[in-house]
Length: 145
Image (cartoon, rainbow, N blue to C red; front, side):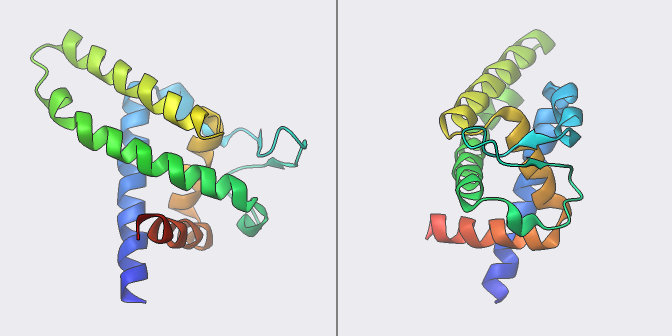
């Protein structure tokens, strides 16, 4: 149980870091994450109304798995490129690196089956809803063990 709590705490910290990175680079994308989105466009599933979802357990397991997989890859990308970003000597170089990271992250997210908006909305939900955050933490633990 203690390990699960540590994983959940780590997930929330990682998620917050990712959310901050995304917000710094593209604030409109994060702010748009509150808008309703379809979670399964292929079957026209009901939209996730907002971060205050009454029943986060209604989010399909497939979407949660896609999110967890993308999240792990995006965290790895950020960790891999963090030194390059911190080593940027000019604002222009820093902006270029940020844009490259953002483009790579978006490619990872889309390749994993999510849109940017879905990813950001699920990320926000994982940070604000304890039940959904725990669900994500369990899948993260399974994916990394």
